[in-house]
Picture 1 (cartoon, rainbow, N blue to C red):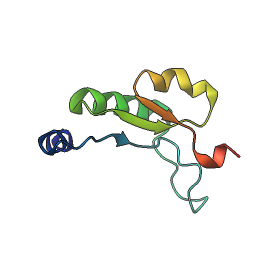
Picture 2: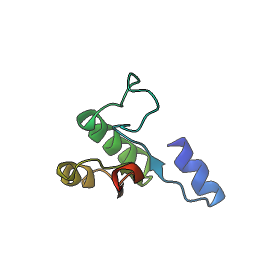
Picture 3: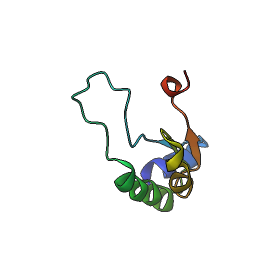
Amino acid sequence: ERLAHLAERVGLPVVYKSSFDKANRTSASSARGLGIDKSLRVFEDVRRTSGLPVLTDIHEPGHAVALAQVADVLQIPAFLCR
């Protein structure tokens, strides 16, 4: 909420970007993220409380419908486009 307020005050557009599954991390033993179920709730809460648009990566076609309900922008990571 604070970030959204500061952005509005200075006239700077801000998008909240977060990944729920970091499949392309540098170490296979590092954490991948919250997963889709927890992240859906987080994204919904961020959008509702801050008013900021939410952007996230999509890794599987089956995730598109659920993520589209809570995110404004879905992007396909470059490493999945090869």
